[in-house]
Image (cartoon, rainbow, N blue to C red; front, side):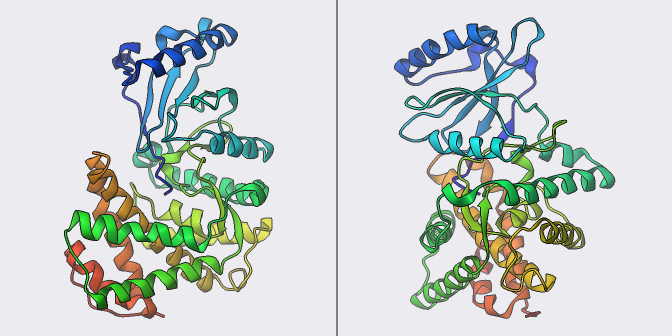
Length: 367
């Protein structure tokens, strides 16, 4: 999860009107209207139908606007500088289009003001579809998401993406002690506990850096995929980086908002692993030959992400006034505890998690 950039489905259409769109900055509202007016004429859009399309954990906002005479609806992004920079979004959208994948088409952009006009990928999030699906439907949807991820890793040119390097990995991990341990739970670690944490952080960072590098979406999860006829529609890709090959599959299998039993996780992980090997996704360093080694790398990568997300969700609560995300903290404590229980090297993490999760665990390590 990067930043993070999470979208929620908008309320039903009938409850939305243009009056629901508010602006705290009158000058920005004026600039937006001046930008949109000629585009509405050019693309046959109906400005009075402008309404919220989703909410977001960042400063970005998304609006939906209808086309005239039954024409296609469009999405408008409002990403106010300096909090947001639309240039990475524009760049990665181009990479997705050149890769032949299904992302929003960029129709118009005012990069200086942070306004984008995009094609509309629909209104059914993968997350909503999975929550309502029976086992067969869920399996089909996840297999499609896995197949699209493999194509993303093969086709998207990672050479122009920022490096997911050790410094970034460590900055992300640092969110956990700062915002979760200290701010959310009011716990101050001893020097010994801090040293334990630093060893765990170094171990997770080293594991990530040892993996082959591919284009990493950083939020390849059901909340950022759309169900659409052209295959899974890819959203919120502006934080893509060049980084560890297991990151996105770990994000998909151990999601922030929906969980699966481990037997199902492993089944989908094996399917990804087999498809990735056949497609030529780089799986060097033993990951190609040994699924057990691949699964270990995936779990270590997932743990790094989950610790980061624990920090991010607490930061959203305490800094940004978005307390709702904290409701999912138990899910991430469960993910983190399960992985720490399994690997002997991660043992020092357990006593750091217990005072936060409220779960007392007995260690029984596999590796």
